[in-house]
Image (cartoon, rainbow, N blue to C red; front, side):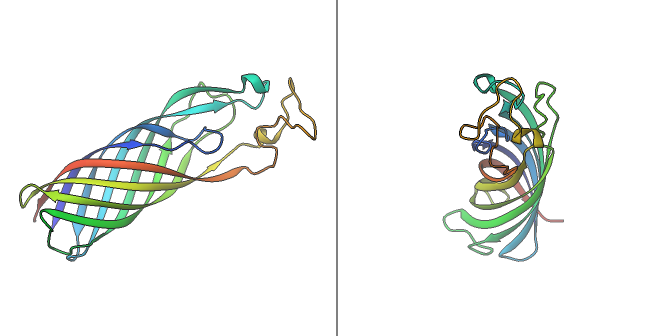
Length: 200
């Protein structure tokens, strides 16, 4: 069988230890599912999020370094494999599932961010758990929780001491004094929607 679902969601997270990654905003999207057997189906979804993040400027004094939050629009496209825990049946109308998604997130350049940091385009994977609740044989509500993993990459400038406010060996003022310019982050993504099941 096939299904289409309109989705509304909420991104959480902290944007990494610097707070410059996308976080904390609303997401809307749509999903198409193809059921290949009673327990297994594939999903294809696209969503856009109006998220927010902070700006960290490595060129200025430490006291003035972090500003924001500012808004950033993120587009997300993914493919998922879903395992229906009750197979082709429901339990009191409920059809719980688990699964995993693989996708790409597309960020837009912010003119207000002059720090050299860019979110750019990121591959991500997202384990998920959720359930559908069937109102009728064709109409259902859907809710799930995802954990989105992606890797943030910081610019080389984050390793440098600010010219106007340089630190010392004992008290460095670089944004990232330990030279770790990559960071995996986990962002929770809660979604709910209304779906329609049909056959071709």
